[in-house]
Length: 130
Image (spheres, rainbow, N blue to C red):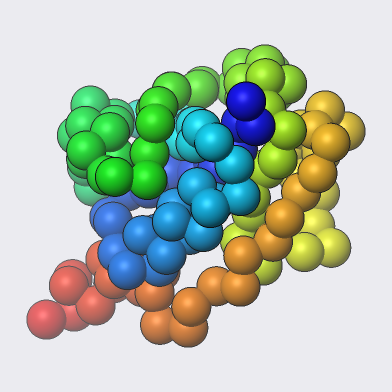
């Protein structure tokens, strides 16, 4: 069975996330989505994040057709342990040329071209400015 992994915060789901997950699922038989714990999100994105807590984010993702499994991770080493179970990692195209956690622990990294105008951070800012 070919396992594919996508990781990220997935704080405020939007069309870009759905396209990414559907694309990732098309590359294999089983899609694992690894999401940052609330503590990790706050460390990476600031104290006002996440908007949706890890239980809400996990539950939303688990209910998407493309997603087979959702796991939480709180450190790079926890993420690497999940990555090592998989054959393919899918990352957004903005990671091209950047260091990627687990890049030496996976056979293949595939980049998904981000869809302009779809970003959780931009969506949150838009809502805050309304």
